[in-house]
Image (cartoon, rainbow, N blue to C red; front, top):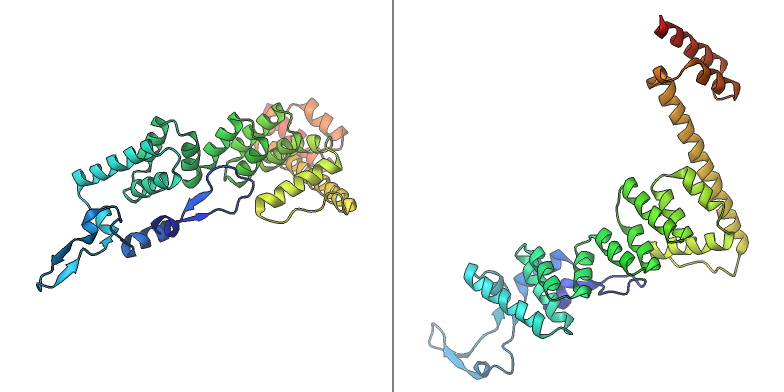
Length: 296
């Protein structure tokens, strides 16, 4: 009951690991409200005692929060028992989840990671990163096994920087996973590289990528063998979008050149840009004038 209250099954059909995710509020609520029955195997279950009113009673249930409120030495005894339980029950995931709950409630989750690494429990190490929402580490583990589809979904859900997305895109490109490489170059805002890749991806492959994106968001995928004109239209829209981003990037680059870094351009560069239509006549004369003034 304690574990069922604290965890839920994540809605990620593409993930093949332990999919339990912790809900902290439920964990804390369970600690406050749940009570434990004495196990049937414990002979003290049938014992009776006299309470403060001298009334004969059976041993009551034990509130779970008493375990979490134990002082230092007693707390370490419980943790040692849990460590031993994980060691002695390698196929019992519930024991591992219970152990994690205790470590988490005492703000010592890294101790759980050390434990599973000591026990060589790769499945639990991966799950630790999963439940701690360290998707970048989960993705790295999936990369080591060359699990390209799951790596795609993991990295797509992770909140990473443009530099980190570019590194992931470079890896997918090296592995000849062109659809995934294009997707992450797009997320990294490497629009020129993304456009070059997309132009070498077929409409059918682009349709497969669209479905991967939809599955990642939890949406129902499209029928690849149904309305192919839809994918062709989306493909053209994406190409035009990338071309637009590239034009904006070029305009922003020119703006930085024209406003902030004019001193780096000589007369030949300015005249070449003017000849190819990259500068208007007004901009050309202004830059030439500034160049002359700087030389003076």
